[in-house]
Image (cartoon, rainbow, N blue to C red):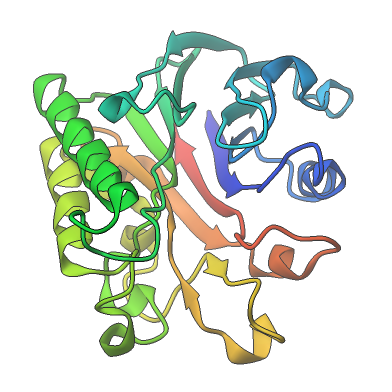
Length: 260
């Protein structure tokens, strides 16, 4: 049976509960993975009236936090604290069809792409290195990885490759680290499998007066699948319109459907 999964950095699920409801009502993905929920789990809004009665989440007060909301039953597979940051940045669950879902919120990395000058950048690289090692040691099978990975790896994942080469989220060292994670787990970038050519973004800064007209975006949000099920993924899309909804997140949801 096919199912649709969406990933969205919501930038506070309590503040933006109305647009989460709008997404669930209008798009009705079977599974919605949220990042930056910025709340303890017990204070999360309840979306069960819309059919999302299955929730696996890890939360923190005021920042970070990841949640998987599902119409389909979920088994909690736990979480990992990569780089020992003490942050709620990963949670995993398994659907009844055996598919494991990993929901990640990779550290943003601060403003200076130099670990000697910026602790946060070093933490980001360490986080990615531990992800690589974990997937190398425990090669994923029948698995989907989604989330805000805070890296736009391809030249056409940013509005200007040349101008962003020294900007955190598109520097060569970050792209290399993310590539190592992908290679270690034999992950397939489902979004780019389905949309192989052309500029594609999922994030637009709040700083732009008119984000849509300026269109200086980056593709920071990803849907990957383990190589054994990647061919079953299709219909990838970014719901760009959501960036323009009332009191929006600076990210737009990314969707994919899997025939499994």
